[in-house]
Image (cartoon, rainbow, N blue to C red):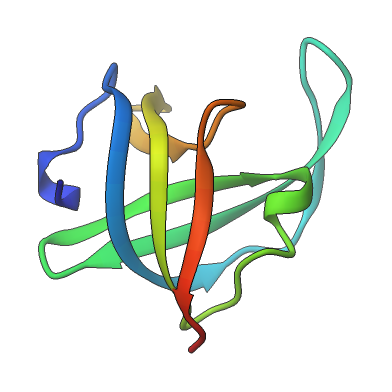
Length: 97
């Protein structure tokens, strides 16, 4: 799958791309608890999408890393598609940048 093919509501998404940017970590109040969040920008040859990194995912990737996101899901936040890795998904680092 490619970034251009992603749309809100998709589930079970597997995509490969490069991390080109990562925001500073912030604390977010979720419906369960306060959790750390950083937002990465995942890019492939067709475009880019925000990738939400929660808790341990934040330290897993660095700018320049090539990754595969397995079993992700896409949601819309403020009219922008965002890729998420839930409890069934994972991020695999293929190569370090």
